[in-house]
Length: 125
Image 1 (cartoon, rainbow, N blue to C red):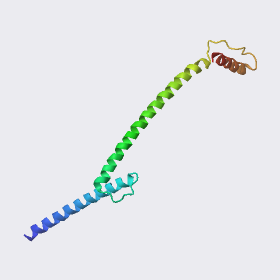
Image 2 (image 1 turned 90 degrees about the horizontal axis):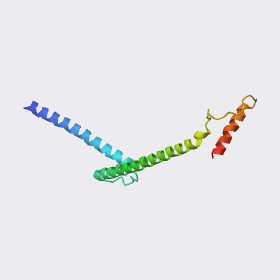
Image 3 (image 1 turned 90 degrees about the vertical axis):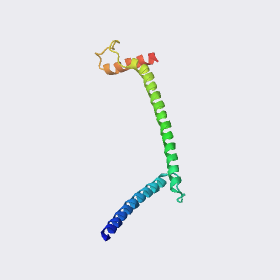
């Protein structure tokens, strides 16, 4: 009989210790959430209030993230449009092998070539 009572007592103590660790873990996570919340000066908030504020803040951050992702997409679209417009403007300025090349036998053939393509660009614009 004494042995059965001792076994029950050990099992209850073990269960109590497990339950205490579980509660401590939950309380630590709730306090961590409180520390992550903006304007968390109200250290006397209930656990339920802390959880509600945490959920609201997470929703706020999700909405903010969605808006920022939309803005990134819009800016990427603008950048692509800009690159396409610039490539239409710049592409005629790129050295065209079919265009006549200035006299390359002179010592200033490189500068003449640059001047030729610069003139093409000016005439294009």
